[in-house]
Image: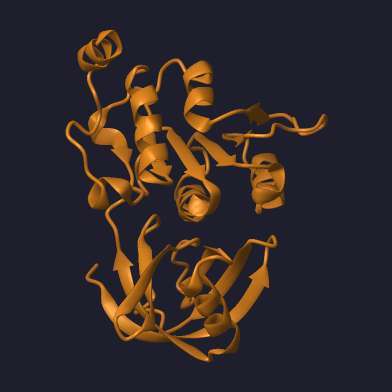
Length: 259
């Protein structure tokens, strides 16, 4: 799909946490079409466009969802919040991004997100469950503390409804007693370090990672040691912050550790 510039309407702005808010937008159905995993760009000023992952699959209703992190110390973050609350219409450019789900694929999905990177994974999960409810899905969601897992209730509902789906929450400050349920686990630490202790073979999986370049490549390096297939790992980071090689070989990792 070729990216188009369009005008849409703000339907709803909802606070999910003190730092994250959900935005529901509506426009012409064909103009809002996108693949699960893609992002849009929103115009703040004539020369300022800000990218956001689309947090919903295309459901033929002209609507899409965004999850936006509010950073009080950033001037354009406050500007964006004010604009969304008072604006009747916004100018968007969409869709963009090659980190998309193959809806007819059958490989298990390993989805790894940090913070509002969950938005991209939400769209991918919705699409996967729509086309193939039996497809195994493992969601790993990293945050500083539990309150930052702003859609935890929804994810738990997915887990209860779909036996193929598991949820691994990773928080730097850990979890209180009672977090764990069947197919819901809580892990303490940094997500790449936790993955290193919890996963033994990812060679059969399609892997999607959403976060900062440092987080994404740290996870890639860990997964490379447990069978990650270079052609089956996807992230928007690979487009705007590429590295070579994308996935290190075992030999190169051994040489780096010994040097």
